[in-house]
Image 1 (cartoon, one colour):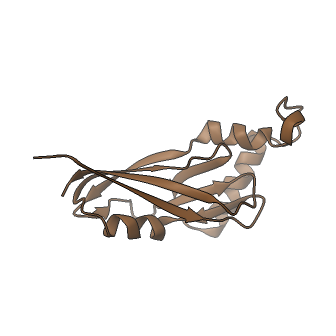
Image 2: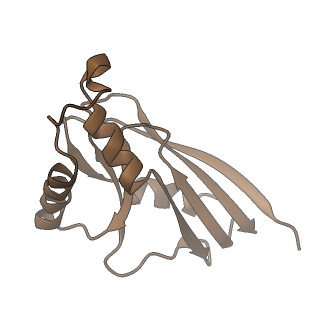
Image 3: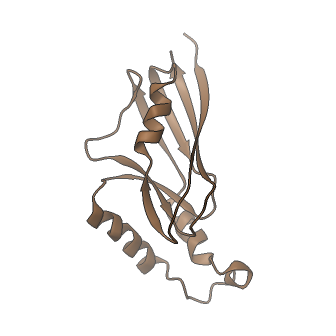
Length: 140
């Protein structure tokens, strides 16, 4: 038995200062096109102000994500980094929540729960050059 690794990139843009963007289909397309049958998919957002989560795709909860982030890390709180580019709150939100996740791959498909989708939460947009790096590791 040998372990195989495949690397893919999902490129996308954001159109708002803050938004919740569902990228499940884009990631599924890469997994479906890979040779990995059983293993894992590491999903990584290489951005200091972006957040990656797994959760339900429902409009109310997407608004609640943003509201919860605002309440946890307010924008105007005398952050020292704001002297540079006025986005310290975005960096802190990303650090608190995270920018990666690992999803099992079973029979060549993402093994997500019934109500789980893959979301990128933009906290410092709009940005035209966002991406995810996918590492699929497993057996073919």
